Image (cartoon, rainbow, N blue to C red; front, side, top):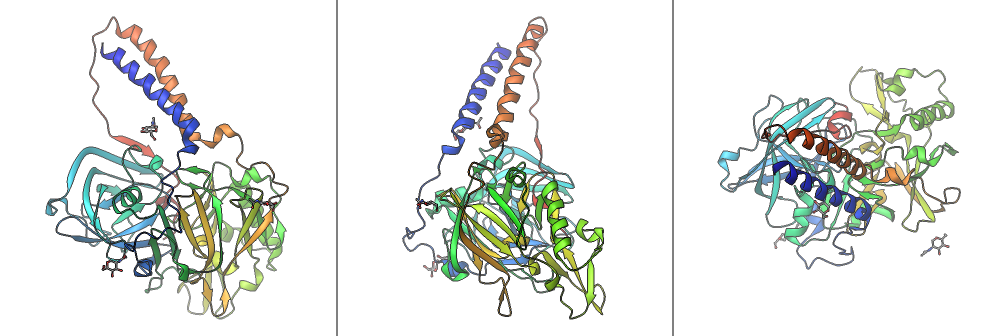
Length: 483
Ligand SMILES: *[C@@H]1O[C@H](CO)[C@@H](O)[C@H](O)[C@H]1NC(C)=O
Ligand SMILES: *[C@@H]1O[C@H](CO)[C@@H](O)[C@H](O)[C@H]1NC(C)=O
Ligand SMILES: *[C@@H]1O[C@H](CO)[C@@H](O)[C@H](O)[C@H]1NC(C)=O
């Protein structure tokens, strides 16, 4: 009977997955609008400057976990969906969350292993109460992955002990039933389903002693953190913060690639990725155009590949040699677009103290085989609003992306989305790759189980042990940051 039950279960799961794949885009969240003031329970100004850190080592927020409260710093990552915290010592971190000292910690009975290409962490799933000294008032109970062992996850000298995944449940490990932090926060405090991020490391060299800092505003938008208009682009699918890119310009020159190239695999907004990452074809076109536009001939290819620095005599800022870079995003009025522009100061990034007589810089753009990533290099120019309630991401010029009297970023629109009338997302079947993969995998599994059943009918039943969930994730921060 056991195999038969299993078969039935698989069919049920299969139909559930199919259902979600067709309805996935319509599962709108709460619906609270930005305008609604959350009854005086949140004061956004109290959250300003609640982040420390920089693009190279990540931006983190202070939290307390457990009873009595244990203080930890947690990295803000919009490219993943687990709240994971160090729960065992490691040579690179100063302290960790001690579960035995917390009377409110509960083991939920599962384990989780997250594997990256260049590292991994493993831990147990539990729940505990947290609160944020510079966040919404009150404490909430959240899912915690207590990291017991890891490799290549922490970096020497980092000042954070955990990671706060701010993306959607679909990315949660081991499965979407582990409610992500922000979902729990919204459900338990009643704040609007919106958060916004200002990261202030633009033009700051990534190893100065004084970290740049920033703000994570939970529950809405703080008007003092941006200038000019806020432009919104629809969230294409709620897993990563996936957006649609229509066009790229280097200086005044349109790259003129098929717009599907820009969204190859996916295009996402990810605070946990250091650089602007571009699909290989797009990257090559950008580098070629920058090389042609910049007045510097025969620039070493190692600089573009990220293996070499470029150095100028001290005081000779290289900015004038390089063009601006513009990304056109589809506007919420889908027949329009708007563009976000970064000055070369944002992507030719200072690196401290290599040689006392020289100022050295690295290239803040790299190539990618798993999609376009609007990482910290770009985000630092903008105040970015993750408006989950209205399924859109907003960009406005950040008040901290300024050097002297010069703004390092621009936002402008509207532009007619002409020439890109249809969509740039490629084959519609690929729009929801995860669900389709799951659906087909389950279909395959069902066929396999059917065949196995015939064999099992003449063999004794064997009980299988449950296993840890092991996944691979190539797109999160640990892989693509620069020390
Ligand atoms: C489908 O969606 C429902 C509700 O959103 C969820 O409870 C269920 O687990 C999902 N099923 C799968 C297979 O992801
Ligand atoms: C928390 O509550 C205190 C006292 O009621 C208030 O002054 C403060 O602004 C609140 N903080 C936030 C972030 O809402
Ligand atoms: C959307 O943009 C088009 C083209 O600019 C314009 O004609 C139309 O009125 C806009 N629609 C809305 C609802 O604003």
